[in-house]
Image (cartoon, rainbow, N blue to C red):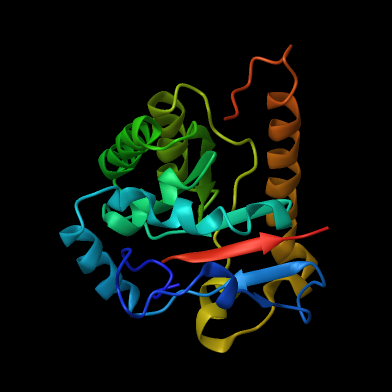
Length: 220
């Protein structure tokens, strides 16, 4: 993705289709455009590129967007050109709320989303916040849950992702965490809730709204 995110005119820039790879061992219809440490250089070059620098990823996605049912962009929660690009390229944003995050920083992320909504050629709506890595039987979780509900005016997913040591270890040991049903169950529940929200948003009678950086793509 580092070369995809380079500004126009850079010698090493390549199209998004060149970096997408299938992941048949995980799912026959799952594809990945992997991130790379060189994204830091792309972020710096985008800072110097003042003209529509927030739209580099949105433009890259246009060539492949009709080939997939869903495209998920995973970005670190740091205010940067990469985050702005991820938001401007998205129709909807899900903001994860980890127990250790300062909610003031989370509020700044939503403010950035509102700015991107004005810059992007399409609507960038907040699909909801999701409580992540939560130690459920603690006072901290109760406090974070209450404050998150207030901050997002109730626009919070009902599904809560609990803290799991298996998930925390997975980046280093590379296990497929979805092989353990009890570990994977909250993620399946979140996916199902997301689909329900999207289905409701596509219904004109509904009141819902709809329209590090790896790009996950699913194709039916």
